[in-house]
Every structure is written in structure tokens, then in C-alpha cells.
Image (cartoon, rainbow, N blue to C red; front, side):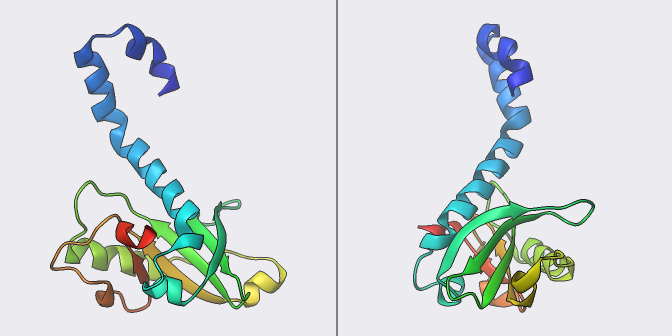
Length: 152
């Protein structure tokens, strides 16, 4: 939003609200992604992903033309590598959206990792803010679904 700083400072309330409406989804998505990375080592203990951990600090990963990964972390025992994707949504994820996101994540090629990281068992995680009552984390066969309540 830096290029719009002047309009934010001098614009009317309506102008500022229009800018907020325009950029809010991207800002919220970036904040959600960062929250997921920061909270990975502190997942609620009763969650499926926490049971596969505990996890060390997470980061983003991308290199060249390979797909970007939003949340990459290693289990503290060094046996597993989390490859995660964050999906922001203002409302709960429904069954169809969850199914589609899980299929996409399961089909996404893993990164070319160096040395021992390439030998780790890969765990794929999908981070979504909330699931609707019709959607269930168990619907995701090869993907661990993490919701905001798991990040507390």
C-alpha cells in the first residue's frame, strides 16, 4: 500500500475505505501466511500435525521456476519435513473448496531439497482459517488440515 500513501493520508474516508476494500484480501492473506509460519512450533498439542511434530521454526521456500511453498518446517527429531500451503478465506472453507485445495496440494511437486532434507518423510499441510460444518479435516486423505484454532 506504500504507493497509495498519499491517498491514504490526504484522501477522504470513502477513498481510504475503497483502498482498504481493494487491498484487504492480499493483506489478510499475507498476515495469515506469516501467522501460520510463526505458530508452527506452538501448535495445539491435540492436533494431528502437532502429533507428527514437534516442529521447529518454519519459513517460506522458493527457488527459480519451482513452485513456492508457504510453510516449510522440519520436525525436531529430524524425521519429517512439512510442506505447507496457506489459503486465506474470510469465511469458512466448505467441503468443495477443501477438497479442491487438498487435491492441488497433493499434486504439487516437492521442492528439490539439498542433502538430508531430501531424505525426510514429507508431510503436506493445508492451513485454512476455518472449516464449515459440512467440511472435515478427515476428508483430506494425504493432507493434514490445520485451522486457526489449532494455531492457538
